[in-house]
Length: 177
Image 1 (cartoon, helix red, strand yellow):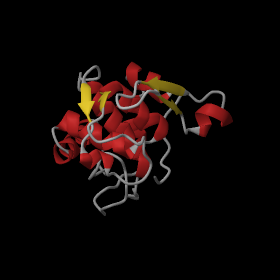
Image 2: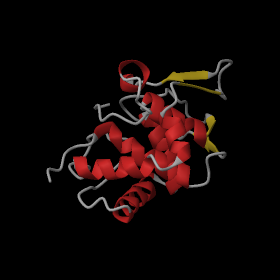
Image 3: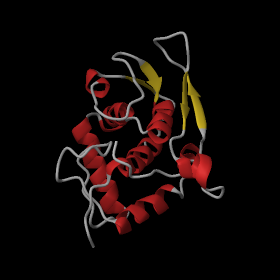
Image 4: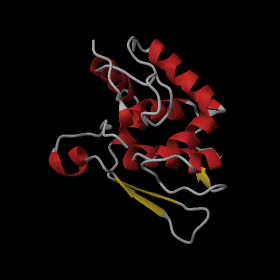
């Protein structure tokens, strides 16, 4: 099986670990590490407080790399702790040709890869979780903004869900971010 870079589909694992953590109602304080994450972003601010559930919506609908880091720090205690959890979960569900090195999929290392088969295993696993299915299939989500007078409103970037295929129920594309 050919190992490839997996880009944003990494976020399926990040989302499922957040959901399974039992912390979805808890508040996350955005760190400077999360704020400074490159690529696709929710434009979170340092010190901002946001519910973990809202971060998962931002992760899946807008592919927010800053959300991925904020989630990893909350759920894993640190980015490295979360990456360890990602690899443990991959092993647990039978992903034999996968290694995660970050929660967002940015290609910052050669040690972040998977196969199409392993990504199918992950997607099948995630689609058995009702909360994941609801979030991944949401077309628009509104979240309170603790630092501004307006709310965040995130529209799903997944055109298969929003425009191209009426039977699509959600998911995550592996588009480089």
